[in-house]
Length: 427
Image (cartoon, rainbow, N blue to C red; front, side, top):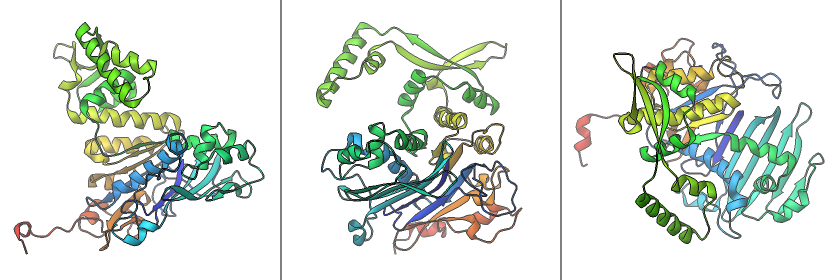
């Protein structure tokens, strides 16, 4: 469960920008607010919707979250000694090339509240710390100043051994998780559980193959049926690969293995060299029969929606965090409202899952499942730096037409729209 996330000196996020999922004191309806013993009096928002003009920094916020997750999961396992840490500092001010990138997050996992933070510059993590709260005082688990480590008294395990294994360009939390540190591995699971989906749309052929391999969640089919896509069911069809196809696939796999320098796992070989599987969707005919159509016969929007819904239902099932960039580009407004309502209902979201999306779909601003403190905006200043701010920073009243107010420019975060003829002026 995410409480707060912030990042600085990453992409267009020059100065620290913070997204908070803590509910405000507004008198809006308590739609889907999440309670947890890890917080004494505050409640948690089930979703947040972020608006802003194109290139205002919405996607950079999502990329920062994805980047933090990637570094926690893989900086120790995949990094090479002495290699630079993959960072994306703010490029429009030369001074920031020598400043660290900063990532910070507060989250709840298995009833404990954690605060995790790190700084990175060049080929080293210069600062890293993790604190935990379990109902008593806040407790330090570990902190790091470059390669100097300090461990809290309560942190049991092979701390010194893992310290020796931690390179300057790998996170201690990543090293601890890779070496099965009991307590720190548990905290790191939060990052593995979260799904962060960037706006770069997967090719239809790739997504089709992945869905055919993994199967389609029956709840996603029920969702598609409910919004009148015409789809009633799904099935995976399989055909035997011809000998010529097998020979070509095996030759390609051998070439890839030679280039990479290692053999592919057996499960990959079975998938690549096996039979051809494809996903088909059932549609009802006028005489009450079911006709199955190939995925290529479905709309691109429907196929992309399946990818979104898979992550949505996984989050709802386990109480995970789901982050989706450019949410409205893949779902109709009514479908988007329905997804938001799934997270706002204790019946469909009993485990406290959360959804964070960036979108241009202004219709959602008046969605019944959205409180005013769930609306955020991004806007760039004259230096190209992104500023993230909540609607609650602006005076509004319960019942205001938020969509109308946003489109009229009352809240900022919209592109300047001059006269159409101005587009063709050269000076």
